[in-house]
Length: 389
Image (cartoon, rainbow, N blue to C red; front, side, top):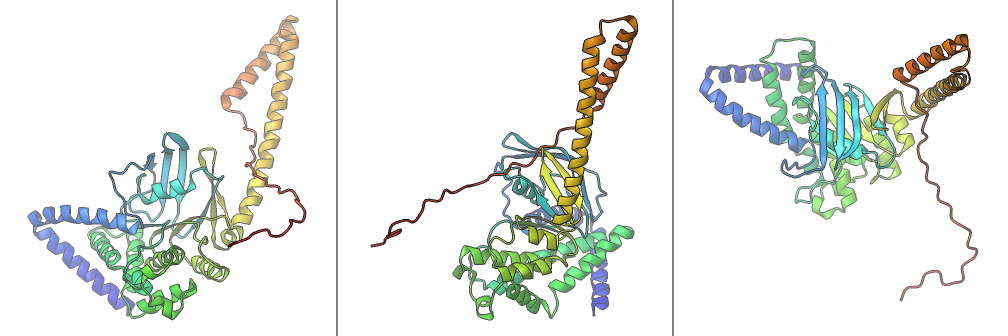
């Protein structure tokens, strides 16, 4: 029973914590080892092998504004540089538990770089968040596709360590929610239905029973990408980052994935060019443009409507300000050196104009660049169009 398991896990964690507290010398030694193991596990769970010595070309600064034990992530003053180029400047990144975010922006604005910066913890993210970035296929090995998905021993160790850590803290709402979350995930990763759940995910992504028994090295890169996606869904991390998850999927698998992600209960942040997919999955949209992150409530269609309304109001305000400034400048130029009365009025308008500029003027709306390709009609081509020998 789930409740019995929770009690046993809690008792075991409390016993470990108590035993650890009695041996102070051992605790210090073990603490160093556990910290090193924790860092290694965090890197592996992120879905990428991270070499701290390799220069990624990224440079980040940011301030953690959310509580260290919170299930939400809020980073302020977030600046992201890539090879010296500003991608974000003093932006706000807010990812709330239970929300599914679609990340949009012009090509080349740095969406994939942002996902990697989050996965590599270039910004201050509390260690209790396990982050899984899906941006590459699973390694070719002798494991079957089913075994590769179910390889979660390291994840279980990490969760049990976190459980042990939390039992030493005074209980509050945040701690209780995190404990319940850990109990639920441990039940999923260590239950009689574990194999059936993994097989169900693989089946949804297009794997037959025979394919589930094949070794991963026998699959192409596209199918190994599906296995990596299945493993990410099976692990069910607290932060799931997906970079174009539908690229290697057929229509049937895309429909299944959309239905599955609709039920994702933690934090999901994904990049996708499929409007239908974003409409079906997302609860929020983050628009990355002009070195900032703008958050919109709702799916893609709601984002388009809200953004159009905001831009329309912005342009109205911009035109009004420009008209007012033009009229004041014209008045100042005409009457600045006229009679005393007119000169005083001109000076008053000059002060008003300076105050408007100091207070910040509304920017003109810049439309996203659209590339259009046109192919001229060349008429009927004489055979052969292609010839092979």
